[in-house]
Image (cartoon, rainbow, N blue to C red):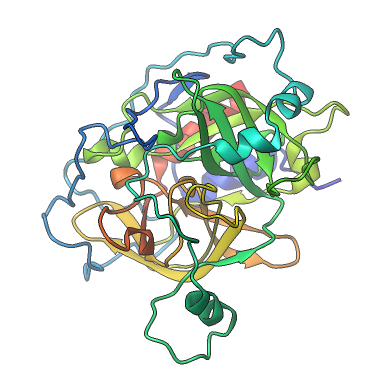
Length: 376
């Protein structure tokens, strides 16, 4: 059994973040979905890409960054205040009489999983593998001479990160990345807010393409917690994150006891060494495997967000955790960001997979975490 947090550790989280829980997010189980184009890809809510507030390219910012883990992120003058309104609804089971782990495993067959598309992420849909042979060689041999920028490499994945599947109002299967987060009940996962889990939502840790039985099972989603005023444009993009509670499996186990969990932490500053793990959808990546990149973050100029430069993070990787202090043995670390935020987590245009964005984790995400752990 994996060890979980108790109440004392929850208090420690509050100390780590150095914040009080004054605001609450919304609790939903079937939030509205982003608009989808004819190709099945979702677009940012205004139909166009949003530029950083200064209208410039997203270059690292030279302004001073917070120098301690408890220092609040700088205010850009237009930060959205979290909406205190929220509600809880029964999970949308679709036409299912029940929605349990057994139901989720029966519904999410290998074929349905492979057919799932990515929601709004602002990324193109290539018709080739996310990692070409030259880039793969560079990723496995960092000493090789090449002018290529850092690139994600395929690997077998880790138990605490997996794929979030759901069905939208048009009966299209959606695919995002999510991660298990330490919590008192051991039943919490974190993803991007714009992933909008719809009906028949399920989480598959360390998703293995084509497997008749997934290595860590298929887990039914019970409820989703996000901010009503979150978005992928403007100041609402600072709130582009969401938690979801996961039901126990048929043996009564909670997910964190099976997979382990990552520690939620305040973003310590704009410059962090991180390990990013995600799952591009098969439409973007024919190998249909997890990708990983070890890189360094900087500030997304003109915003209160972070950026990282590493190729291979196409549609489907929204929600991918940015982990510091990653432990290779346990496959866990401290989550200080995730792919999301402005434009759903990245720019548009050629080679857009090479740059990803993240909201800055501050008081808003702690308030939402506390709401999810108290209600869930």
